[in-house]
Structure formats: C-alpha cells, structure tokens
Length: 257
Image (cartoon, helix red, strand yellow):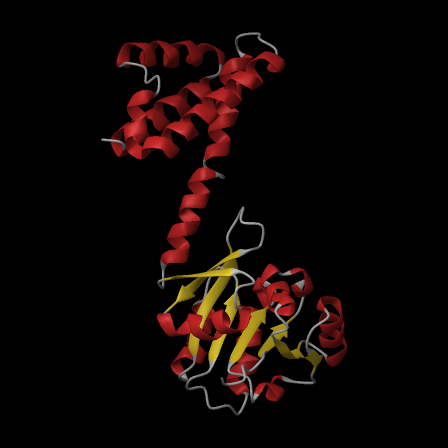
C-alpha cells in the first residue's frame, strides 16, 4: 500500500476556521503550510494543530495536492505564487476553497488538475461539494478518507447549485416580508400572524418534499377572481406588496405550467 502524500496548504485570513482545512487537519493530512509570511503560516498551523509552517510555496514540491484557502480578494495573488513556482504541474491537483474557480485557469493551462471545494450548507461540516473533472476528487478523497463525505459535481454546476440557494433564501425572504406587509394592513398583531406565516411556509415545504411539482396542486391556489380581489385590496393599503404579489404570481404560474 503506497504512503499517501500530505496536502500542502496555502492559506491566509481566517483559514483556521475553514471546515475544509479543519477536515484535513482532523485526518492528519496537512503537510507544509505557506501564507503571506512565515509568522502567519505558523499561526495557522498552530491554530489547526496540523502541518508545518514553511517560508514559501516552493516547499510544496513534493505535494501532489495543494489546497488554497484565502479570502476572495487574495485568490488571484495566491494562484500567481503557485504559477511562479518551479513545479511540474502534470498530475498535481490544486483545489480552491470558494465558489468560483476561474482564477485557477493559469494553473490548469500549465497542466494541473483543478477544482473548487465548498461545504454543503446545513450538513454540519461533514459533506463537501467539489466542482471539477473526475481526476480532481482522487487525491482529496484519498486523504480525507471516511472523515467526511466528498461529492463531485461537474464544472459549472456550483453556480447552478448556488442559484437554488438564492431561490430558497435570498429570493424567498422578500416574499416573507411582503406577506408580513399584507398581514400588517389587517390590524392583526404579529403574535397572531407569525404562526400563520410559519405554518403556511412549512406546509408548502412539506408539499414540495413529498411530491415535488405535483405538490403544487395540494396547496390552496386561489383562482383569478380571488387573486384580482387580493391585489386590488393591497393597492390601497400596501401598493408595493400588491405589485409584488401580481408580478410574483405571473412569474411562478408561468414557471409551474
């Protein structure tokens, strides 16, 4: 059985709190650690209790897996450091922790296997998504072993996954605010309307979880006459909520056809 090479870590910022870095540390899979300075590299290695600080990325020569865990504004600089290193990049894997691997293109052009890794929201730091070609998952999976679950997704899939999160979070929040605005026009206290709002959202989520798109028919979908009456009522008391309801229903009805 061949001995696994340890991962090299190029890190800065709050990398010590990174779920990916901590997972590698827990698997005793971190070797050389480089950063903006030897002092910072030492601080990161000490914080995660793994790896050894090195003065530069040239110490990564024997590492077949390099993890970059830096703030977004430092990603291009980190990649530039690696590009300038006198390495043979063929068969070497570079994984970026983040959501956009475009900055890895120079390394990919040099022959490196590249990918982008991120923690799956709501999975308690035990499930990671790795975007890249199939070879990109080989070294990380071998080092992490069974400590976490690593799921490979094809290039471009991360942005589509993030779009789903946007729908479920950022795009949903204003709809909850609009519902609250409509309730507020009735004079009812929030201690009465908040439970109604929560149960309505939970019912919609259950309908989706149990039947996917077919669950749409199990909800109380108002007919056109009721919708028109609702919109007209809001035009006098909360015009923005009325306009939101009209626009949202037009969009979702078209999508659900």
